Image 1 (tube, each protein chain N blue to C red):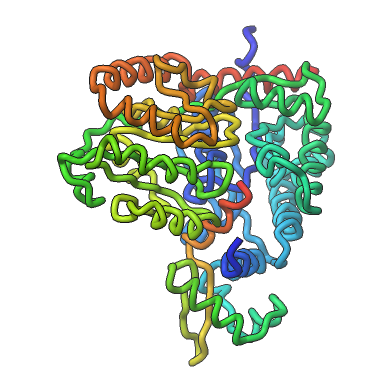
Image 2: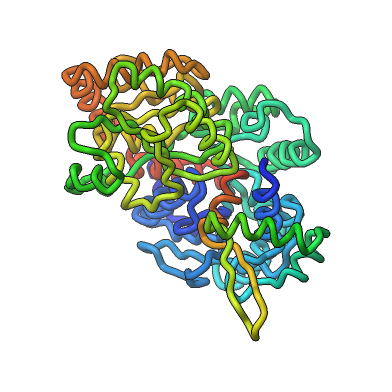
Length: 395
Length: 78
């Protein structure tokens, strides 16, 4: 029988699952679990509680079990270990009803419960590495960072198979953790293109955000933390406005750097053209992307960059840093534009080029859509993950 | 990181994430080892940005992290 065809009972552990959306992990788990369920796997997601959402939900054949965190602690790491205890308890309770074949964890946050479950159930564990602490903070320098780095190593040591989303991540992890390469599978992220196949009244959407029909719209969507490099977009704004005076900049997302970035935006002298939207729900995210003239992704560290796929599917030209997974998703001058990382002049040059040349922008959009449709569907990703599950259980 | 965001993280981690789990200023002060006056200053800033919600139970003020506040905290670690 062809590999990937055995139906399995999968216990997936993730600290975020919609509507608890923080970064890319929630979107990844949502897309992947539904696609794996469509392939016939019995999918159980054990995740954390979220206000207003029930403890158990069936989401398109994915069983979502939300765990209440009964205790708290001011320290984040301690809090993480506490919620892992409650996750582990839930997996133990579920295991009386379901004979899981495999445990699948995402990043260090659910590693302790994943490892415990693996050992008491005597089942293999697969992990997906979305990013690493050493990549996120650039240099390990605090006790918490060392602890997280240690947990990441431990997760990959205990896992029988390790999934990474890009060659960049594979190199980073293999070098930093001395991980045997034969444990690793590279499987990219994906996107549900159907969600973007909606008609949007662009003019109405832009009006809602105060963007007039004659104005250009440049958008950033992501967490407002240093690794996302939003400051380089803000520093590029005067250089963009010099060429395209009638341009508005919308920055969607939240994070601990927000107040610093807001001050920086005001200091450019173009504060009236820049608006911070905070967190926006998915429906609004799609409308915004479909109404924008350019999507800028100025990250300084980006293991994959699922937002690039979102922009490419939505039909907006993407200008991104030439780093990490972004360099693998985007082919410069064909499916998007790659700017020098941490270089406002380079971002401004790329944005100006796209805003000035409509024929070029349309050509990029067309190429990008084609690439996403061919290479980044959840169905194809789920088949690859399914093969990893099967290989892992055979070993 | 701004002081009030660090404070928001602590409120999240100690579990004040819904109306039922909301806390009084005295309780927050004990958990955070912070003077009630300083707690109030931080809470006021976070209420103005809608990361914290103030409610009343049995005539006393209670505080909890809003959904946007939870997302703000989690964005630091994802």
